[in-house]
Amino acid sequence: MAMADSLANKKLGTYTVKEIKSNCNKLYNLGIVPGARITVISNDRGPVIVRVGNCKLAMGRGMARSIIVE
Image (cartoon, rainbow, N blue to C red; front, side):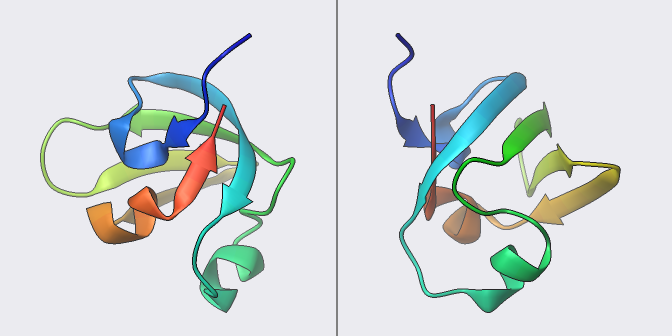
């Protein structure tokens, strides 16, 4: 079983959102909700780039730390 950790610490790959630790309606509006599948495309430096459904998004590391995935 995969270990839950924040999105900011994950390598490239696809994960399931387990929890969102902030009250950020923007994430919910983008489809980042518990149970959603999210793919990390880039997590080197700067923003974390992910794909949710057919959308590609860049988010700051602070926002990425509030998304717990497994």
